[in-house]
Length: 221
Ligand SMILES: [Zn+2]
Image (cartoon, rainbow, N blue to C red; front, side):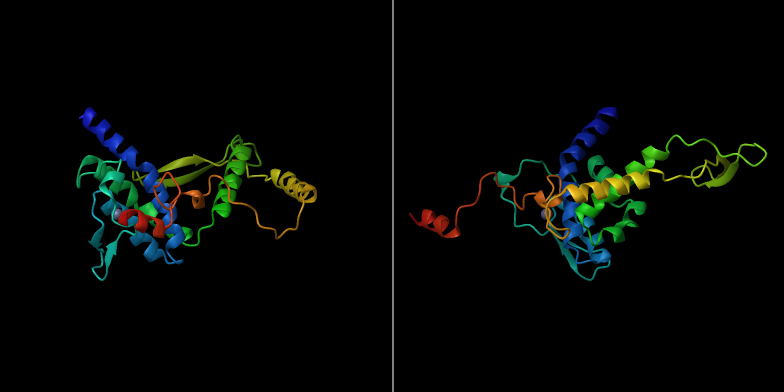
């Protein structure tokens, strides 16, 4: 059982990068349509089992992958088996309801904005993680209550001191400093960041393509 689990894990790992890339690809190419994004995104579950055309959930249109037929020699990853534990594990991730509900935030994806939001969230988290528990005017520790979905019970939670956001001024100062020491105008284009999904190669070739004409001629000779 453990071995089976590990094997499933390994098979899933092989696909992890492709799945991530697929997500950013869908986000960029869904034309701001959350439904289309969902259809494209869930299509990965067909692709990984070597199914490149399928019927969509609502049965109206067929879904299909947006790649050319893959040459067998170019394939390095084994396909997953339909209904195998690896495929089931991947299905659980791809169809996670909480995740699917966030898809609408990704229909107009901009990597720079995405990165900035994560950086701000990290700054805020680090700055506020050591907050003490709040106290009442007469010095009593403050508590609140919360319903736990998992245990189906109410429980108490500590109420923390309110956030101070004291880092915001420092952050603004840094922005101005950076701006005043940078050359060029505010509206200049910045280059594509190395981790930007735009850097993902559009095909799997490891050498640049020759012209089609030269390939045809090569074939003739
Ligand atoms: Zn495919």
